[in-house]
Amino acid sequence: MVLRNNCYLSIAAFFIVVLIICASIYVLIRHLERLEIADTQDQLASIARLKSGQIRGYLKGIEDDAFVYSEFLNSALLQRGQTKLSGGIPDSVGQTMEITTTVEHYSGMILLDNKAKVVLSRGRD
Image (cartoon, rainbow, N blue to C red):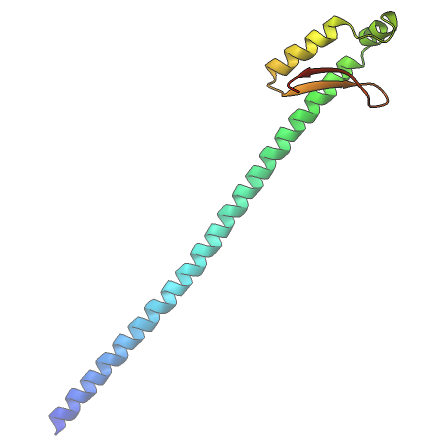
């Protein structure tokens, strides 16, 4: 009888140890899942910051280009050309716009007057 009780006690102890090991493994797996989720969220946030910076840089480049071209088109040379041609635009401006559109891979450029009316357009329609 004592041997049988020792056997039951050993089996019970074995199952308790197995249960403790399974519970520990479950807790460890849940902890690793939370770490993996946090790491993935950090990586996605980093990618979002990187892409945001790239888009901001791209838009800043376009804004800088637009500023340079607007300064060129507002230059005294263009103003003199318009007055000499009675409101017409010199051919050199159109050629410059075509070259710029091609070199910068723009779909087109539009020259507006001070009332936002199209004066000259180059590129795809």
